[in-house]
Image (cartoon, rainbow, N blue to C red; front, side, top):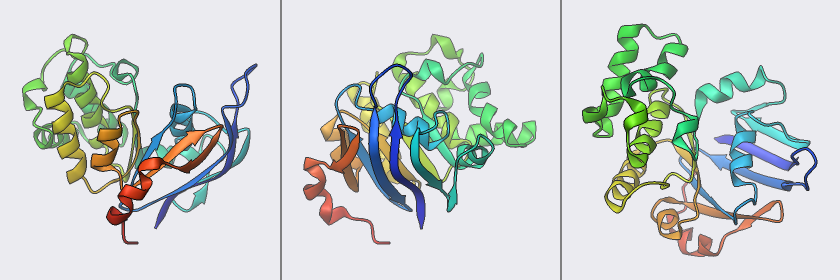
Length: 229
């Protein structure tokens, strides 16, 4: 099943040169797609377009078998595709970790008891129960990064969109993150500058250059890990 299909997507910020100039790709069930590119190439922009936080100036975004154009079209997309921002402070805003992780389930209509059960389940999965009642803004950068992943996973998304997920992680927590992501069933789009991280996770790799997506150098090494669809 094709989860996302981006076709000839163009985008430019007001008063600036185009960032995307015909970017196209598909994401299928079970894939972990890595995207690389230089700073400013448009990688974060691409993820934001996928969930409707930005709108393309041309081209089509098809998600979960439906074209997405208006704001209302993206409500379902944001329920089914979880974006983990590059900066955790853009995503965490509740007083405690438990409240941050519960925010999504509560907004999906779960009761308080259901949401808190989901909090405990996800924090246990990630081995983060020791952070449950901590004050969010007092966490380290690496701890915040892991909590943002927990907050997204609490909504049981079908797709994970990860923007530089190893930012602020030390070697130990990066290894934990790799182990966690390898164990998850969700399809993923992973934006990362780290070639070692990409090689550990990706089933397919693309590079964003000149506003378009093409095969990445490490793609050949990943052909033996291709997902059967």
